Structures are given as C-alpha cells and as structure tokens.
Image 1: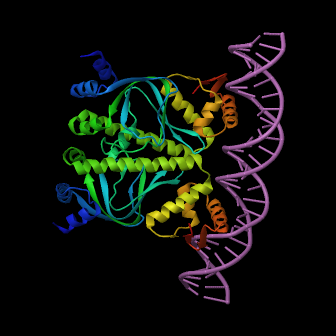
Image 2: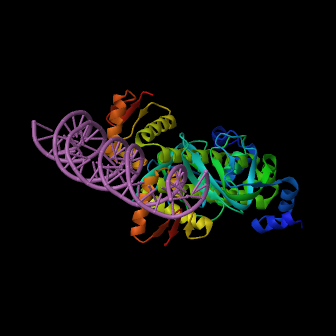
Image 3: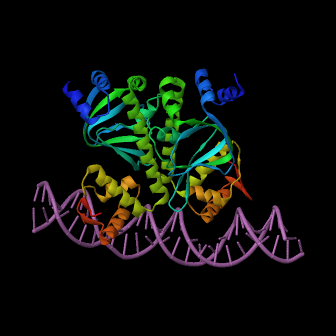
Length: 211
Length: 211
DNA sequence: TAGTCACAGTAACATTTGTCACATGGACTT
DNA sequence: AAGTCCATGTGACAAATGTTACTGTGACTA
C-alpha cells in the first residue's frame, strides 16, 4: 500500500480496499489554507471533497453577506451538498470556508456516479452522509424556529466545543454574532448572563465552557 | 399493463417499466384520509411512501407541540426523510400529516435498498428527491434565519398558493400562525398590513392573493 | 511613552414580536 | 330571535432583540 492509501484507509475505515485504490489513482490530493473559500454560493460544482485533515465551515449566505452556520466538515467526512448537487450539473447553494488548514482529496463528478453503482462502501458512505447532514440541518431548523437566542447561543458553544474537542473557544463575540445572525452586543449581553449563571468564564478572545 | 401500472407510469413517468412492475407486484396500495398522521416524530420507519394522489404536510414538531412546516409532498413525490432514514433502522424526526385525501404506495425498506442497485431509474429518483428536498430545507433556513415575520408570511402564502395551484388560500389565521410558529394576532396584524399594501384581499377563512 | 486598534461592556432607546383582554360579526342551531 | 361558535380585529402592554453611542482595556507599534 502507498502512503496515501494508508492515510485514506485510516480516515475512511469503511471504504473497501478496491475503492481506496480507485480513489488514489483517480483523484487529486490538495491542500487549503485557513481562510480559503473552497466553494461559493452560485458556483458550479464540478467535484466533491473528502477531508483528510483540518476543518471546513459550511454556511448559508444572506443577501447582505450574513453568514449563517450550517455545520462543520471534519476528517472522514464529505460535503453532502456537493454529493447531492453533483448528480445534476448544479450550482452550489452554500459557501465553504476553511477554518483549519485542510488536506483533502477532490473527486471528479463522473467518478462519483460510477462508484455509486460499483462500490457498495461508497454507496453506503454517500447515504450515510446524506442522512447525518439532513439530521443536522433539521436540528438547526429546530433551533432557529423554536428557540430564543440564549438557547441558540448555548447550543452553538457546545457544538463548537465538540467540533474542536476542547472547552476553550477562541472566537470573538463578533464572529459568533455573525454565525448566529445577530449583533455583537446581543452576544456580549447573553454571554455575560451565562457567566453570571456560572456556565462560562469569559476572557479576551476566549470563552471557557464550564458545562 | 394493469390499471395500477398505468397510474404509476403516469405519476412517475421516469420509472422504467421493469421498476413499475416490481413496485406493482411487491407493494401495498393504501389510502389515507385528510387529517391522518402517517408518520410521527420518534416512530420507527419501516417503509417509504410514493404519493399517487392528494397532499401531505411534512413538519417538525417543537417540544410544546408547535408545528413547523417543512414542505408539502405531492403526487409523483416521496418523503426524502423516509428514503434516507430507511437506510439504517432509524426513527423519524418529522411528522407527516395528510392534508388532502391520499392514495399512495408503501414500499418496504428491504426493497428500496435492492432497487438502488438494480434500477437506475429508482436510483435517480432517490438522488433527485434528496437534492430537491435539501434545497427546499435550505430555503426554509434562509427564511427563518434572515427574514422577519412579514416576509416569511408572504413567502408562506406564495408557497401555499403554488402548492394548491390557485390564488385563494383557505386557511384560518390560527392555522397559518401554527405553521410559522407565531401567534394568531401577529398573523392578523401582518395580513391587515398586506391588505393595506394591496397584496391580498381578506375574507372569512380565505385569503385572496393579488401578487 | 503615546498612539492606534481590536475586543469587550453597557446604558438608552427603537423595533419587532408575543401576549392578554375584549369587541365585532357572520354562520349555524334551537 | 336568542344563543353559541368560530374567525377576526385591535388596543395595550411585555419581552426579546436590534441599534446607537460611548467607555474601558489590553496588545501592539511607531
């Protein structure tokens, strides 16, 4: 096995060996820097991306440039939207921005379709991806439909902590406000209340979760 | 061709003849009355449903019984969530309620999975369903994330008119409020403003769209 | 050291939305 | 006709959120 194949196997343990070989011989290994925008609303989707390392933020863009967080992509995952849209020659309805430097494999559209038929493990991966993302998006809807900003903020912080695997969140109030589509002042206000309730400790550019 | 096959072919023109035969010989034709709840949050999904006639409302349920409209299912469509969840033995995260009397075909889980591999037209149908529903859900997110209640109400009315194919919407303010997760008074207030702007005419139990 | 900048805190106010209370008016029943 | 629903209209107020304006503070730099 080549080194690339070993990496793939580690990050995507459910892929069959034949599939991994196909990926390795047909795809591009690429790197992206934090801050890069990989995909943008309205762009045509020509390929999908399998994440090997790093983190990508998927969000919906409002008319005035608001960013509304949908979910994070992490190693072992792929962008559900690109998997779906790729089926027909479609433009993206979301924006993908690199949060932590990323190493990834890009897979051309044509192959994906072929693999669905030929590789059971690819088919299962795609279905699994659809399902989990759909669920995640449903949860997002729950939050904005049924919950007030204070609960949404709590949910956001927990999700973020889970994504980075630690209790210290290094974001400014401004950045959080953007992702929740509210204003910095509101975030400050609510965080202050959370601090009074003993749920967080606030520092400069850092929020320490106590939950 | 049997009568059932002719109906299927008419409502699902893209299905291959072999697929239609398989559906006809393996599935149950069922009817549901308006008001029936076909699927409920937390229930196990054992089958999916292809709609032949009528209309079904898919919504998300809040903790206190709020109903938040996701989308409508119509003839020629299937529930994306059931297609997805069916892959693994999964509980439903949405509720499906019949709006207009429905005739439908229920398809057991096991067959769906088999057909994905054997029938190209089924595979394409499933992928298409995923994609369009995902897009619809993204639009819903846009609405609640970026828009205020007045815009959401307008959007809701337009969508409803489109679904029923007419300009008269026969819903009470109370029903609309439920689906937008707000209160009747707010809906009344906003509708009144819309009437003043010449966008609608208000009658008892009916809203006439002028847009 | 002084200046600058980004981040955070906060008071005051505006706006939107939710809630309560009550009125009106049509449709239907008795 | 009187009574009873139900849908709707509306004023008054409460609560949540958005906005404006200003302050303080730590970090960095000229």
